[in-house]
Image (cartoon, rainbow, N blue to C red):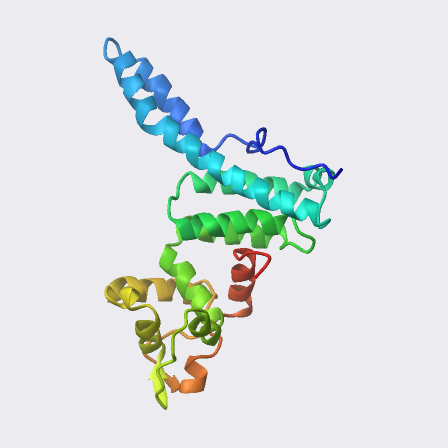
Amino acid sequence: MVQQVDLERMDPAAEPLEEKLHRVGRVAIGAIPVIGSLALETFNSIFEPPLSKRRTEVIRQIGEALNDLIEGGVVTEAGLQENEAFISTVAEVCNISLRNHQAEKLEALRNAAINSALPGCPSDDYRQIFLHFVDVCTVSHIRLLKFFENPKRWFVAHNRAEPYRAAVSLSQVIEHAMPDLTRNREILDTVWADLYQKGLVGIKQLEMVLSHESCFSKQTTSFGSKLIAFLSSPST
């Protein structure tokens, strides 16, 4: 029988920063005379259950995916226990997940943990840079990067027809595909500038007019493609 990960006993390899802060907060509040115990009870009732639930859910999802890999013979539990890159990634993923609630970012973190268990996972430098990106980026960063990895495939997957014009700008393409992103132009410009500065996309100006074929071609750099691969499900 193939030995699987015991999901009931899985736990992060390190105490998350948020838990350290939570513990420090409890000590500080508990030291306050008279009101300390009441304030501490309030603090615990607000923060402890949601943080524990969030971390447990992330661990459960990673564990279920790992069991699928184990059943498929891709990895073994013994191998994972000796995989330092995987252990470090899972510990960091658990930390970052406590600071984020949006589904797209949590999915990206889960995929990063799973991909770190696979043969040929990115080196330490790449993994740390990629995880930091997820921690500090917005969902719009991830959405735009995934979209421009393969715009044509995105339109097909979302059953949308490409707007046909002989010449078009990237901002017009975004407006057609994701109109919600163009409603706040300051945010869109900031996000795009950030992606460009990090070397994840190759075109600096969203308003640059390109041919139809160029605009609907891949806009991510090789570095951006590696990031997207790391944050995507291994099955895709």
